Image (cartoon, rainbow over all chains, first blue to last red; front, side):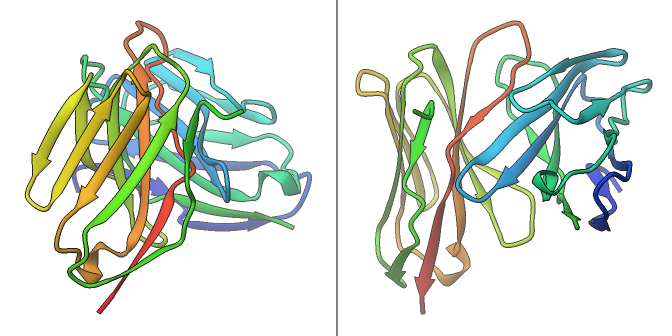
Length: 113
Length: 113
């Protein structure tokens, strides 16, 4: 299916465990983003990538790691999950053109117990 | 103080009403303005996109940007129950860096049949 897909859709884990959230896009967009959505905060940028092998921090990067070895994939890893990382995580992508219109995946709902 | 302020609602209106949703912002560098609609447990989907100041109309939806007042609006005419969702304003500056969007916290709209 064309578009941007996230997996898993739901995840429950325990504090201290490592968790990886997957994001895959079929458009060959150069830019990809990870946001988290929390009540009262809207979406906040965690990390972004301008191209394969180019990543950089966003607004709330602490406790997260990303990689981008292939253009179509942009996994997000929580190295040692904490309760404060309970959130809904959205992956997004766009072409890199001037309009900056981003397309979002359906999200991963993560609960850290 | 947040860069983008948005009343979280909830806003409840009867079917057929005109809805007005608003955001204010503080960063004068913002030039791209977007409205995303987000249904429950779904990812945000782009509804309207505007560059710089002015109005844009698409069917029942009108987006307005007033850069002098740092104020953007989304109007929904003849509102329908299917319009019930959270509406997120988003904006970005023209930069060559991360191209991330800055979001408002979202306004939850309920259209009563």
